[in-house]
Image (cartoon, rainbow over all chains, first blue to last red; front, side, top):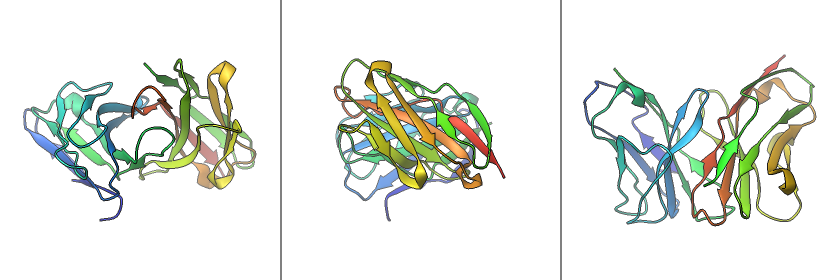
Length: 113
Length: 114
């Protein structure tokens, strides 16, 4: 593993199903983020975590949950998927606050039908 | 709360034309500012960032941005674009009192015609 790894790369999901998007980083970054990218809306923050054991809500948290049991992993769960959650999801991490740049995963393209 | 506004959603230029993409942010305190680029089918990569010092920041691939505090702006510029600059560009802000919150603008899609 080098950097941030997201899985799966893409997924077609039936509405009402539960789905967990996985994110793992090997850079020992404290902060991690989940964004969704939609055409014309840019990247919108879903949830974030400043450090292992803590999480916070971003701009569009409804319908999503996260956990941060350790430094490396930050899974995003859709408890009951709806078509409006069709999007490209990006996980990112940063060493700490301030001027540190964020590193992004390759993204997960999710289609809810 | 912090927010970012990018004025141009789509920009089409010919090769060798000059580029300026607007970015304005809203935040009452000290900020760190970033420009990211997303090439087709790829993830976001950092172009440049500002956190203190010289307000004119130079990044990779000939890009630069100028932080104008009085205007709450951080516009991205390039004197002469290339076809390979076709991508989507995102401005982002992290306020110093906003913890680790990193907020992005809506993005600008740039198409450079050969």
